Length: 439
Image (cartoon, rainbow, N blue to C red; front, top):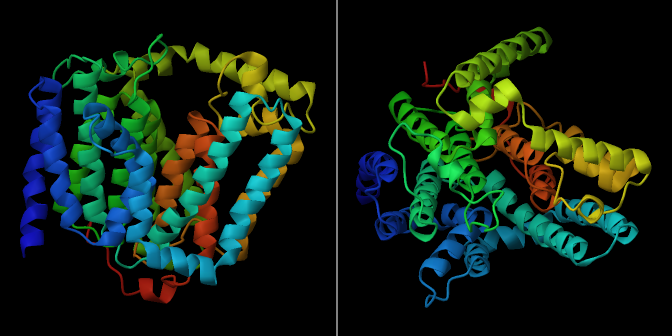
C-alpha cells in the first residue's frame, strides 16, 4: 500500500518538476532528494538495472556537485552488480554462449585495433568497447529474463534522473532556462562544439528520457491514463533536451507500439501483407511527424529538416573517402580520428566501414543477425518480464545510428547476445489470452 501511495505521488512530483525546470524554480538538491525514495520503493533487480545501465552519469553528477562524497559512476555500477548477483551467476553458469558472443565480437574489433594506429585514443576506445560491452550483457540479460522488473518504477527513476541532469546543468553550467515552451535553451547552452565540454549533454538527457518511454510502453498490458501521463511527461522532457535522435526515436517507438505490437497482429500467422501495410503506415506517420516538427519552434529540428546538417554530412563524406582508400579492412579501430582529427562519423555503419572495411562490417553484422535467426527472435520477441524488448532495441539502434561511436554502439551487440541467452519467453499461445487495455 505504501509503495502504491509513493508511486502515485510521483504523478504530481514529476510534472511539477518538469514544469518548474524551464521556469528556473527547481534547485538540484530538490530533484536529488525527490529521486532517492524511488530506489527504496521497488525491488532490487529493477534498481540494479538502472545502476548498471544508466547510473554512471548520475554518479558523476553527484560527485561533481558534492566532491566530498565518494560516489563515482564505477561504484554505482558495482552496486548494481551486487544487487543482481543471482542473475550474474546464472548467466555465468548456464549461458556461456552469450558471453562467448560478446567476447567473439571484442576479438573481431581487437583484430582491427591491431591493424589500426594503436595510439592513445584508439587504445582508450578499444578498452572502453571491451568493458562497456561485457557490462551491458549482464544488464540486458537481467532486463530480459527477470520477471521482477518493474517497468513503471524504472520509468519513474529514469525520468527523475533526467530531471536531476537538467537541474545539475543549470547549476554547474550556469544555464538560464527560457520558459516552458522554449525548446532551444538547453541544447544551445550545453557546451557542444565549444571549447569547454559539459559533463552532461543534451544527448545523454534526451536518450535517457527516450529509454524511459520505450520501457514503459513496451509492457503488454497498458492502462490508458498512466500511459498518457508518461507520454506527456517524457515528450516534454525530450523536447526540452533538444535531442533530435530522441525526438525521432520517440516517434518510432510510439508508432511501433501502437500500430505494430497489437494482439491481433501478433496472433496472425500470415503477417507478410500486414507488415507491408504497417511499414507504409509507419513511414507515413514519421513523415507527418517530420512535417509538424519542420514548423515547430524547435530550431535545431526545423533547421535540420529544412536545411540539412552540413557538419554531419562532412563527416559522412570523410568516412566514405577513408573507406574507399582501403575497402577490405578500413583504417583500423580509431583510424577515423587518427586520419581526420574528428572523433567519429556519427553513424554506426559508416564507422564500421571506414575503420573495419567490408570484412569487419560483414563480420559484425553477422554477429548481430545470426543469434536472432537461430533463436527465432526479432520483430515479435517478447521477454519473460512481459515486455516487447524490441522497442528497447529500436531505441538503442537509433542511438548508435546517429551519434556516438563503437564505445556505445557495442550496447547493441550486448543486447542481442543477452536476448539469445534468455531462458523463458512468452509464446504466441499465451498472447491469445492477452488483451491490451489501450483501446
